[in-house]
Image 1 (cartoon, rainbow, N blue to C red):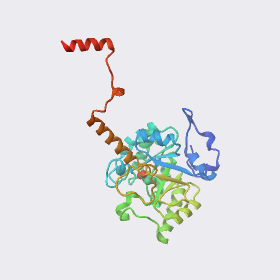
Image 2 (image 1 turned 45 degrees about the horizontal axis):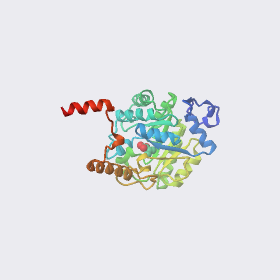
Image 3 (image 1 turned 135 degrees about the horizontal axis):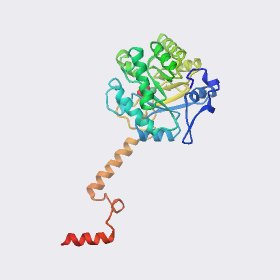
Image 4 (image 1 turned 120 degrees about the horizontal axis):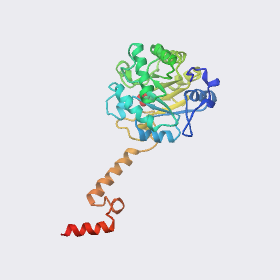
Length: 303
Ligand code: KIV
């Protein structure tokens, strides 16, 4: 499988896609060719089996096991404490629930800010032990060598620039990036560099739409925006923001398509109230002895 940006126009397009259990599998070349066809790309995060089943069945192109896991599932204050073991564990669960979408795993803080060989070994673990089809990691120009080394070794890479949450201490918090001319130009350089090193796509997080539009125009590989405006080639959202399961402040860029938190709370209140009232379990949820056994049982109990 080629991961080079030239793939969208090459022969490694849709006809090479392996069908798995009759499912039209999304591959890295498919993602590349979507840009050349002007088709928008959808990406959502998932961290567990049932969510992966739902997202996959709904036809999302890319499922990202993001290190946002740390905040939305594990309750950490930021993404920095997330470990390789946690990411591998959740990626495996998502793998089991994903048939069609391209599965991308996020490399956690500390797993790639290392000697090249160690960072490559960590990326290999996502593919070999967890079934990821690509990895994502944060950073622009400073990650070139790693992007190139992984691509050389047939591990497709999704880049991530702009607001890179693993850099919150350096950035001074979760802030929109690229707001000055100099910062915007640096983002363009970062984007070009990540593409030149061989990444097959690039996440643009929390940057002004004008900057995202220019990067999207300049790159051959697709940009996937989150808080980067409508001009990107695709959009990604965090599952918990999409379905109303996140706690704390909802990011300005997120749109809530359902209020599952309210629905789930209502379900739990219903259960508590039914148990208190003796209304659960009811006849439908109850198993009885067969009539002949029941008779003998009751007779025995009355002795
Ligand atoms: O960790 C994550 O979920 C991400 C997306 C927001 C792109 O990096």
